[in-house]
Image (cartoon, rainbow, N blue to C red; front, side, top):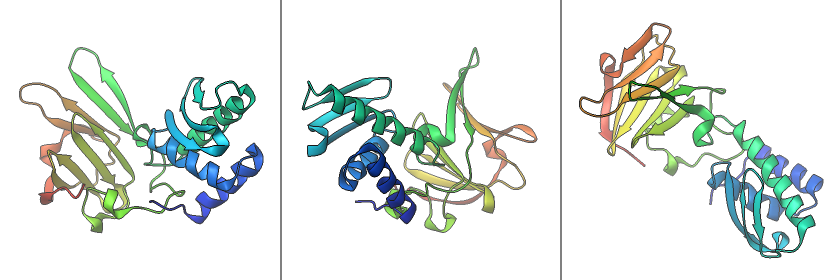
Length: 213
């Protein structure tokens, strides 16, 4: 099981003290909300009335179904955890790349955002990374239509996973702000930088090999 960093442990202790749950219960819920990408959580812990489910927006089900006070406390804790996770760069699917549809052209765009580096709450799990280990921690990650991206701004590298194959590109002096993928025949991947829209094929390929994830 992935472990928490000292910062993550400190957060859990603070939340446990403020919401009136044990550290074990809050840790359980932290992982549950993270696994639900910050929008939902499935959990099972005695302090939460056994098994339950939470969805952002107000839906919550507990084993102790008539304990409305507990429902309110669990909902408040889940919501706060989701807010904290959303501020962690590269942690949630929507945290680093925000998907937007462009009308008429059949494109989807994902825009890089947030601070460089990985989440400071969880100890990195090398097995979860599909890119070569020597690239380190990405500034931003994202995926769409079975294509995954990991951008390493500090070392000017971009890793792209297509069909289980990892391509690593030299981004040169581009400051990448987003990606677009055209669907259908002749589909291609482009990215936006300070120079405008650029085709991924214009970058030099540094390496190519099987994806690690």
